[in-house]
Length: 565
Ligand code: ADP
Ligand code: MG
Image (cartoon, rainbow, N blue to C red):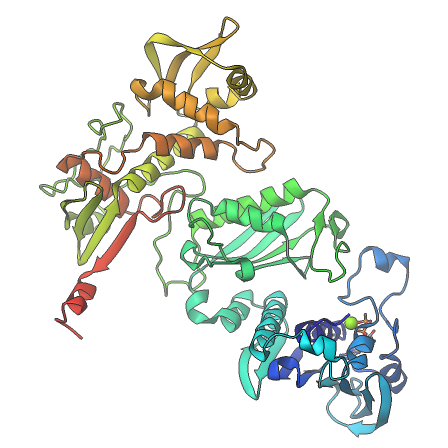
């Protein structure tokens, strides 16, 4: 069934692709309601086939039972042309490859009105005029022409991104909106759809694991959008929408984009066709995977790796400061500068309110060009007891002290967990903790997780647990309430999640133990915190995705005060 102009476009283009076209032109007028014309340079049809094409179930595409199992062509229901013809005035022109003469066929509301011989280049063109002219009820159901053409554009975009080997031209009301060269390069297809600037902010993804191949591009965190329209997934070449794939992508970005912002991507997944079920939805847009968890995990890791390695699409054109430590929790060593006198020194957060231990072990200072840059950093002061104001080169950086510290703690803890270099601090006198039945059950279920996070805890009698050690990152005074917080949080854990199950716990720890708004910071502490953040050693958002830094450039200030135009 053809619901709207966009679905007609989709069917027509799929037929062109099935006919092995390499160049396809889509023209529309009035949101496709007045006209849709799809012209291709494909195989064309014989005169008999051209007449048959409008019969229902006229498909030439199913040859045997095996075909039904692993269908390789896009259309296989054999009724798209018939249903489009039934609700429009349609003209088909087709010439077989190697011929210069062929046939045209014209139908109105599904009835043949004329046919004849024509000469034209080989290939097929199908011209659909006045869609739904004889079905007023359906016509009334249409949105504005603008809304319909925007749906058509989405459909065309998907073809362009899904078939970089094919050249597409899209013309709306006589104006060329899009052209893709069909060179087979996905990056060129991306430029055709999203433009040069956006394409420069994409990361290359390539990963393979146990027969599942992931390739494509993801947008940098700043490219995240307010909805999922810009998430494009193909499974074995077929465009799909999949909550499972979206979720895996979003999980991989989770601490980098804000809540309710959605990372963008163009991702191809290739796997054994027998491990995918494409038949669940008549529009063939949804998929079901035999092993969902595996697919989700592979995609998740592919995206994580891409984010941490940062191979940019636009080569050197756009140098983007990518979070260094996203993927594996690895924190780059960078020099720490004491903002008061400009000398580099060993950093330590020893005197920060909630941290006693040697939690920042950054020894050797490297003399890199970057470190000269940061010599020009100066903390001006702390605004509203919450925001550090920092002058850095020709920028005013405003840093949220809680968000900043939270991110630093998160990265550090993740990195320690991953390197398994967790240090425990044994309590002078072990704490005996009374627990409710529910809490005891949660501890029992998660005892390994708690131990792996550095809480040495064991059963003590029937109703209590004894806590002997805590991770050195977090001081003793908070040990008990911290553990209780984690246990509370565990109620919400999804232990079946294919993602790193410790992340939630670490986020909670980081948030719980970071300095808060209104906490007092000394000048020294403020300078160290600012440097940690501005050196680019950690991602520029807190683990919940809120921004840490807001930058106002000198130029912006000059504009503000009308010193410059
Ligand atoms: P299906 O694609 O499911 O076979 P359609 O109604 O979409 O059914 O098309 C009917 C038939 O018309 C196709 O099987 C194909 O043989 C022929 N056909 C349609 N469009 C083209 C085209 N652009 N080039 C060549 N053959 C085409
Ligand atoms: Mg078809």
